[in-house]
Length: 224
Image (tube, rainbow, N blue to C red; front, side, top):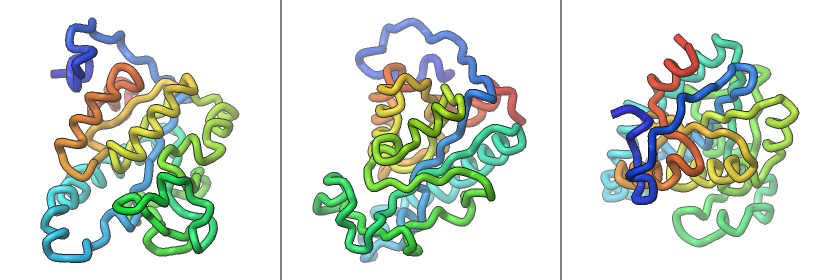
């Protein structure tokens, strides 16, 4: 099954296959979302550590190596690699959006200088690469990224990172609403469970983005 027929939701079950993608290098950027130390930190109990074990395995075995390789392919091709991360500007987190203050899982208090807010070393930005800091789920809503992309002449945004059903999805929807062409790289993303990951890809595919594997993306873009 190719990207043209995979991840179909109820709404697009019988839709025709999309046309071939055109992703000129000068008009395309790779966006890496929230692959930060907090996401890979040990959980507070043995039970929680076990519950999150499949996520940790996917990150270490699939997402991080595939995303690192994709970053290198983009860099070698002279294509922009951009990074987004969650971090509050004030130590007490008053500048965070309401969604980042809600009690529970999403209540992340991570000052921008804290170790947990830093991007994991394997995927760290290179010198000269843009890093945007957000206090929202969407990397577009909470930053000047839309203006930056427009100024750079970017029309196509390749989205990767975590979590598929949260910050990745929010960013994809925001980009689509601003009329960017969006591609999500399915093996460079993860959610808390594989089921959440797959269901969210079905929800956003074909209306807000196209979902491709990293191998399919490389073939489309002519990357090694």
